[in-house]
Amino acid sequence: MLVHIVMWRFKDFAEGASKEENLKQMKHRLEGLVGVVPQLVSAEVGIDFKHTDMSYDAVLISRFESEEDLAAYKIHPAHVAISTFCKEIREGRVVVDYWE
Image (tube, rainbow, N blue to C red; front, side, top):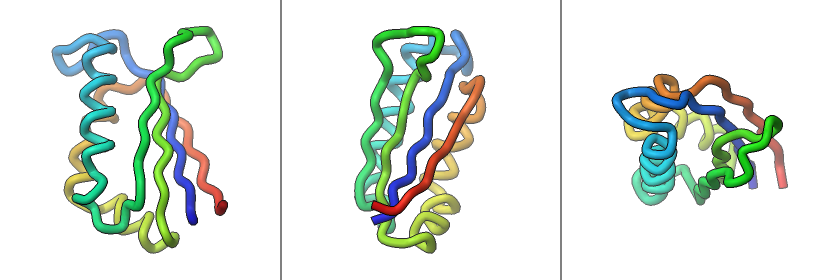
């Protein structure tokens, strides 16, 4: 199984909403892709509660059967829509992909 992890730091205010509001919306939308994007096996979004200097605001842990499935997910219109939203509200982003 291919695990795709993304972590973000978000702006305090963006797209007319607070960081907290945007985090909740992003979590709801990303987890809602399961069953919409056929290649997406699972998706879990965690929102940080510690808020330390080293913390990221949110993490996505998603799973795919293959690299081709991850590539198809990235261009699926439903994913592109939430990805576009995330680009507007984020300050930074890091990614890790690995096989489990």
